[in-house]
Amino acid sequence: MATGVLIAGLGPGAVGDVPAGLVAELARYDRVFLRTARHPAVPWLLEQGLRFETFDRYYEDGDTFDAVYRRIAAAVISAARRQAVAYAVPGHPLVAEESTRLILEEARRTGLETRVRPAMSFLDALYAALLLDPAEGLLILDAMEPGLFEPVQAKGVMLLQVHDRMVAGEAKIHLMAYYADEQPVMVVRAAGVPGLERIEEVPLYALDRLDWLDHLTSVYIPPVAQPRRTCDLTPLVGIMAVLRGKDGCPWDREQTHRSIGRYLIEEAYEVLDAIERENVHSLCEELGDLLLQIVFHAQMAREKAVFDMNAVVQTVRDKMIHRHPHVFGREKVRDADEVLTNWERLKRAEKQEAGESCLAGVPRRLPALLRADRIQEKASRLGFDWPDHRGALAKLEEELDEFRQALDTGDRDRIVEELGDLLFATVNVSRLIKVDAEECLRQTVDKFTRRFAQVEEKCRASGRVLDQVSLSEMGDWWEEAKKLEKS
Image (cartoon, rainbow, N blue to C red):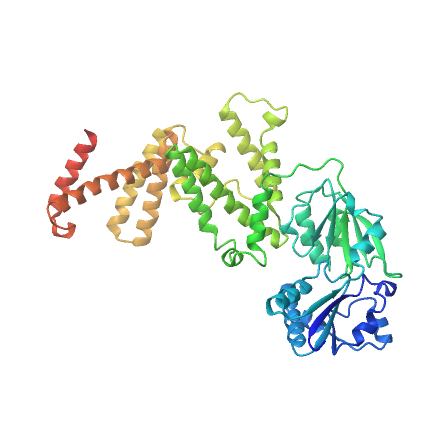
């Protein structure tokens, strides 16, 4: 054979598992490549006089495994176009071997001759070490990409390529969305290799605490007799994991919490708009868009092993149970007002325990009128409030006088401060008379917009543009618009 490539497997690790006659066959090729020298049988290959090159240096230079495997495949293909080469990998060459897939894909595309020489897979060694029958049902996952799959709790799950504690930690975060923290798992290193094989059972939460994990490590999760009910958000979470994955959407992959923060606010307002229009179909769609933003943020956090969507759901679930003792506990309440009082009492206790102010928790990014209302409401529940709106109204008049005095001084900083006080006092009055200040202002803005549109229509009918019309004439049109609206 003048050119082409033989792709061969070296078996799971034991020298006795290297296919018979493989060394002699490899020796007949012009060049022999090993994906890695980190294989228990490699010292024996050297003893047999086999000469080969390895790609271990690529792992030192590459930023990601995907980049390393693509570089390896390109090097093998390039050499195989000039001469006959052999490429040997740990285990079976077609089992969990990304570099093989890339080589075969390029060879088919270019017409390069290839041949695959099978070997015992490390899965076979795992079956023997754990006494498993894969025919009973087994899901095989890649620890490097756990988010692309949804474990089936009723079946056994084999997690491959648990290279180190970091990989184990990321896989653990994903799996804990489906299994109890204490779920027993079997950690297997160097299955079938005499003197190196190690098997240990640990709870799932301790998976990344083992200090002996290496490139020969796999994890087996036995079937669960009573599967844990998973969140119905799982399919959506899986889609987002794919979008953020190595072969996902370039735009989704480059986003951060900060870069997409504004979309969360925009989607929330679109939900409110659908509610106001009383359009249930639109409301369903907009709630989905809002939920997507939450899943997006949870996925980014999961990638950093901070939390995931399951933790988000669990946290709010626990909070709801804790803050509704009249539903989930034995506490009794008379009405909705007492429910709110208890809610604030429990929140206040949580804030004090965390060393936070009782007014903490009202986001600064809220619209200013709404934030003022929420702050005042919290202060009111602590007893810091006017008995009724009359005291707030007197305070509003006082703030108006102070604002007039500030205007007379021409001091911009003082004007800004006093105008803010005036607006804050206005919100206080609206809250005490049980009117939503944000809604009031929004309705007034809508009213102004409608009336100004009438003025613009009058201007167009006169064949002019607004800057050619006197303020007096625009005032007359404005009054006409008011009368027409009231009628």
